[in-house]
Image (cartoon, rainbow, N blue to C red; front, side, top):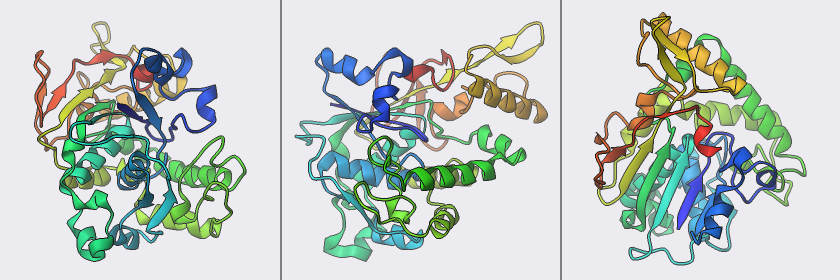
Length: 349
C-alpha cells in the first residue's frame, strides 16, 4: 500500500474539499482514484495542516493502526496542550507487518511528517517511555522501522530554506502566523470543520473535535499555539528545521527517495538565474522574493528553488547520507533523483 501525505495547509481525501480539488492530482484529477483503477492499494491521509511534524506523525500513526492519537505526556506538557486527540476506530492498513510493509509519499512538509514517523517507529521516544511507563503509546516504544518499505519526499524542506528568512525580512512571518490562527480558529469552530475541512487542532482548544463543541477560548488558544512553537510555521524556521534534523535519524532498513523541482533557469542574456518554470501567480511572487534574497546575499547562479523550497534543501537533510541516483537503489541513504523543471505544485498536478 502507498500512503500519501499532504503538505502545509493541505488535505486528504477524507474531507469534502478533496472532491472539489484533489490535493494529489489537482486540476488533473485524483491520483489515488487513478491508481486504484490500476489495481494499486493507496490512501491519501489528512493530518493537521498547521501542526508540527511531531503532532502530524502521531496523528498519522493513529489513523494507520486505528487508535486514539497520543501526542506524548512529555511533549504535551512542554507545549501546553492536551495529550490525547481524537480516536480512530478502524486502522487504514488492514495488515501491517514486516511481511506487509507500506510506502510513504510526502509532498512538501508531508515529507517531514513521514520522516518523523519513521524515526519514531524505529527509535521511539525514550523520554515518553520513561514518563508514561506501560501506558506509553506503541509509537514511542520504537523497534518498528521494518514496517516501512520506502519514504519518498517531494519538494520537502529537509534543509535550511531561504523562504522563511526572505519572508521574515518582509515581516510576512507574523502575518502568516496571525492568518493561520485566525483562519483555523474561525473555520474550525464552524459546521464546516470535519466535513468540508479538518484542522485537527482540538488538542490546543483552537478547533472543535468534529461533531462536538469543545474548543476553548479563541484568544487563549491562538496564543498557546503560537507561543508553544509546536506548529508548522516554527518547524519551517531555521531553528525549527535544525531541531527536527537533530532529532531525526535515518532508518537503515528503509529506502529513501527525494524529488526536487526548479522554477529557475540560467539566462545568458541577464547572466543570472531567472524565473522560467512557473506560471502560478503566488509561486511566481514567492520565487521572485527568493531570487531577490539570493541576489542580495551575492548568489546569482545555481541557487534554484521551486518557488518555496530550495533545490538543495529538497535533496536531502544536511546531516544524513545522500547520493545522486545512478540506477541502483540503496537502503539507509537518500537516493536523490534528477532535478525536474517546475514549481512547488507541479508534482501534485
